[in-house]
Image (cartoon, rainbow, N blue to C red; front, side, top):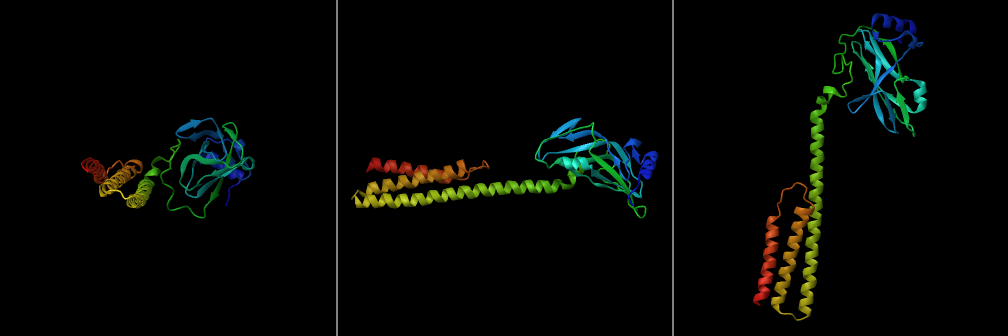
Length: 262
């Protein structure tokens, strides 16, 4: 059951809704006053939200809920029409905290917010029985905004796993790219060999020239393959194509030596 204005006044008198003023009581809700805006570890008295931007809001009021009352935060009608949306938890019985919520600009225009004008309202509901397990979670007794606080520890292993998967995908992408480029180099080398040898044979060139040409082509493409896989497409810093580079250099040296001898 949602509590009426008279019941909300009694909650203020009993300290369930602290730092409150009677003038902000509505028929079935209380208009929260804005204390500050919290973003990136900074607290501000005013903020401008571009379309899609969000900010956490701290209220002047705090709640100290007994074991048979829950609280729900809602956006004021005027703010809905302005283009804001609000995200807030259902505050469970037993929760003691400053009231925090997040607003997001879903309009197509910039929205300026300051602490002089309210944004949200809170209503109170009774539960059918006093709860056996009142709230005692991470954000209990949060009277200064903690951002995510130690709540991030709950998902730290999952976040690390996601980061590892991301790095693994990047590494796989790099390897695929390097392998494709190396394969293209091999195909180019084969076609080059075929064309060179066909031209040499049709021109009646000496066998020594055939050997030199083939050694130069294979050696050159071996060095190119090394450059592609271990220089251009290599993001890990680990060089594994040294044997290919050595073979390529050796083939070119052999071609030069062969040409000098014959």
